[in-house]
Image (tube, rainbow, N blue to C red; front, side, top):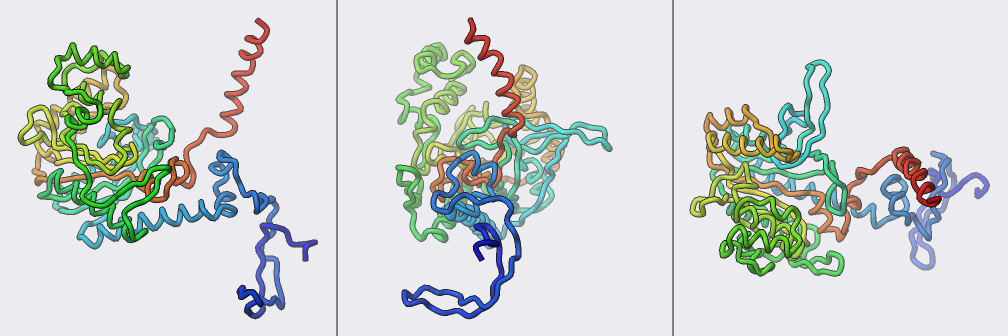
Length: 412
């Protein structure tokens, strides 16, 4: 037997089941047949596959030898199933919208570009399904969602992957407050079904998902956590503070609201550990959100932060075509000035809401980051089966380019 069968081979057996003296269920084999011969050697079972990069590149081996990692992806599948079931049970309809788009939008991000030979035009991989889903709302679908693969031409780090999964949800006659409540219900429902409790470990931190979650305006969050009262300072004073706190591009913000965004992103985000809704965002970075009903210069927008990560983003949807056109034009001006993440003008979308879009609330939830939190994984690569990585060939070419300069430096 040992002469022909090795670790990794797949065999079929016939026989009868019995228990050993220790109570272990065992098969008494009468016959066996070799079904598949493994020509590649598996890692030794005791040590497993520990090389992190190899685990990502050869996920199939990782899944064979690491039970814990295989369980992570079982849990991912269940999380998505529970999410879909919750929305189905609450009357939402699931749709599929285009991945190849002539105009990208729905988020501020740099797109991947491609070319359609037959149509003879440049296309973009979607960065979000938002604008197409809202077209469906215009068309009369009142509760819609899509679990979508999105693509953003950005860096790779612990919580970013250029190809990622999210769910976007829209419901008519709801606003940003309603969507905060819906987000909380969705996440706590999944946690309850999966774990039966609301306190979960994440690294060395114990996250408490018990509702209701904390809510802070962006202004109050900066005041409470960073100790800065934005609107008590002039733009010149805020510029000085930005330099003192080493804010990126400290001279770029043009008004108090833009400095509010800058201080929040630099000094507050990563400190929002327990589930927290941040709301009332400046209009400058919310081109698709409805203007606030009582606060001039702000929008009815929120983001959900957990463990220092943005997990959800939602708002009362902007349904005024004139205002939407002006917001797009402001984004387009930023794009012309070199902001590669600014949005394009989508004239067809403006035309769509010109036919009348009911008051609508919307939210997008990052599924990969949610899976990270619910499975206690601190890297997005641990919850994506085949994460984006530079190919071996590209790495070798980079090393070859660096080698001559290294030798030259050594001889000087």
